[in-house]
Length: 137
Image (tube, rainbow, N blue to C red):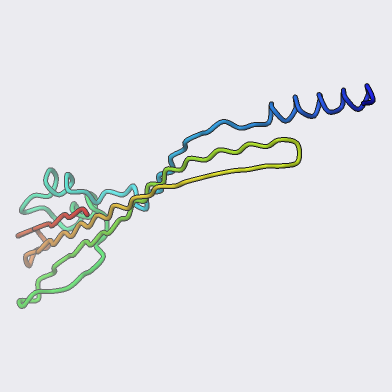
């Protein structure tokens, strides 16, 4: 075999060995939950009977639904749904000169949360009652 060709093959083999990528694991978390003020803690800790509607907006922001009860008093409804998807993948790849191979796998899980808050106001736009429901599945 030609000495020059042998050196080229050795160099190619050495470079190929350096290009072999070891297995790696990465986790991708993609939350769709907004970083806003609407939380159970905000309702439990900051919403009080007698609060003004302006103070409620400062704590929770604007409601999704605005309606009235049988006596035409305002009722505010906050309805929040969030989905969080976690994906973990594992992949590896190896190559030798021109031939190559690869493998990969992925696991994913999805968590969904809902938060519904109902705030009832009196005739003076003060909180007269409130309730909330939180679910996670």
